[in-house]
Length: 578
Image (cartoon, rainbow, N blue to C red; front, side):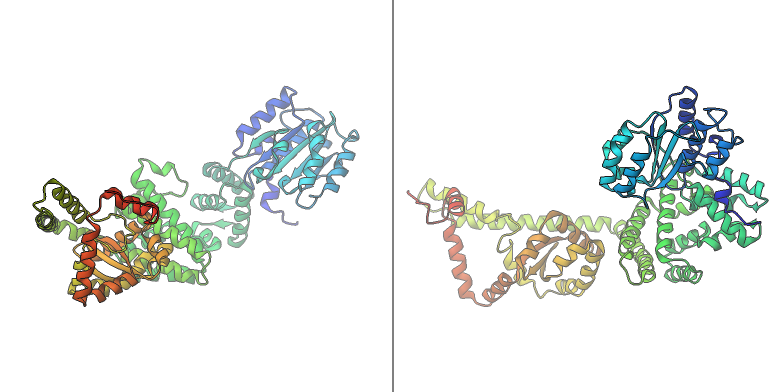
């Protein structure tokens, strides 16, 4: 006898056979019982959840010779012929193949004729979202006011593609994904009837693979039972479907927590030898760490996910990771997963992602331990630096006050006060031509501490690229030219690159990388390359430096609002009167 696929042999023939859609079944049965059946229904939901099966059962229920009844008898000639598709008045139309306006016009012309074999004409339009705009327009009026003997049942997996005018003329029912427990119970029932010996863990894994679709679960069960000759085990399901056991993910997580790069690569290589795909491994690994995070943060979280079968084993693995580490792991894997979509060699990128986690976890723990051991010295050094800066500012303020206090009365004091303010509080605009303390940057450009920073600059660029590729594209245009205390001076060749890096979000990325690789807190200071070159040349020539200082002192004798007016309107439009 010819074999019939399980999903066809066990297709629901009555409402009671359907799994997981009780909210829809009850509404339809009440409508039939109270004779309030609508002329148009819209069944929407994921694939394999019973939309077309429910449409056929409804067609049998309203046309059953013993009805209309909440359940079709499946014994009368009408029910049997509708189930076999032999009734001409119950039409199942594939909208993907008949999507044009001519097919819908033909339907509209024929619907006005009364049924010849059954009580009501039923039009089941599957994948209705595939109809063209013209076809929807042709269907619109007929769908709103069909003949009393006609009924429409529209089925779709993408209801958002339907016009609002169509949806508003139908009673909409949303089919949900079948839960893990309901699917497992139905699969066990079918295995008992088909004399298939299956482990419960194997049926649970098949249910998880189907993603809530009963048809997909039956197809997988049919395939595996044929391979195993009626004996279905968890290991066989993993081997047939290319799945990965939770224990293997636990072993990989152990290697990551132990910073064992060799163990990580060995595990990935074993998966590839078994025929697993790198992108599917990445997806399953993300789900695994997501479940670890749920187990760690939420009490009784095993009820929030259908992938956790042994909560105790997950709890043991979750104890080896901190919440911050799990967040960081998920974020890193997600970024690499997006890049794998366009990679020529996804396996290599998968391995790089895991090695990146190993190296970053090592660096993170090292930096944390260093911070704990050096907390007091670091704080004392910061206080010493602040005290030095305050003393330096007080010294400069005293010098300015002395030079700006002539014997000419209050006017001179005011001018000196303004000069002091201008000297001690340089312009705070980040896009100024020259940054503050330029002379100190010039003096320290050959210091050993700065040479150490320059030696690590390639690491800084690479780390910025890992954090955000777009920032790296702008930041690579600059190069470090000097360092002062906790600031790094970077010279840019292009003004656009400098302005982009100076944006707060981009600056934060760079300063975070500098703190991570250089230790402590660092500020990013920028300058144009041509201005830096001019400053270094001026530093070698004392004469030009004196002229520049005299010019700055001269400009400081003006009133602040005069300077602001000149900046706003230009020298040609401003007239200064004493």
